[in-house]
Length: 127
Image (cartoon, rainbow, N blue to C red; front, side, top):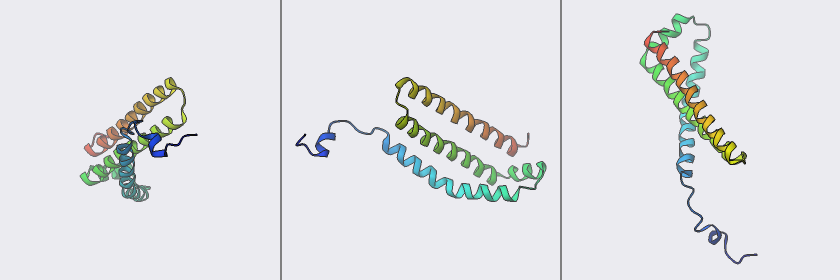
């Protein structure tokens, strides 16, 4: 049993390093995803029965393309941040944790890149 207070026990153990930044960016992306997600659902409902030419014509406009790019960036970054916390909290081997973190970063980067290339192909007309 220690006579030290809880604050006294944690002093000197170091900071959370990027913990506050991580937490803040997760909240920022979550807030950004609310209107972007609602916009995306609306667009899905609007374009549900549209043919390919109508979808391409819609995304040729700069505003929908920019919103779709914003959605992809916010979504994949938010997903990376959330899954990173899951791996840090629940994977207990150092090698497994590092391997999963690398796979997580590569997977989210690849997914975001594929989505962004698809949106750019639609918006620039080469689709």
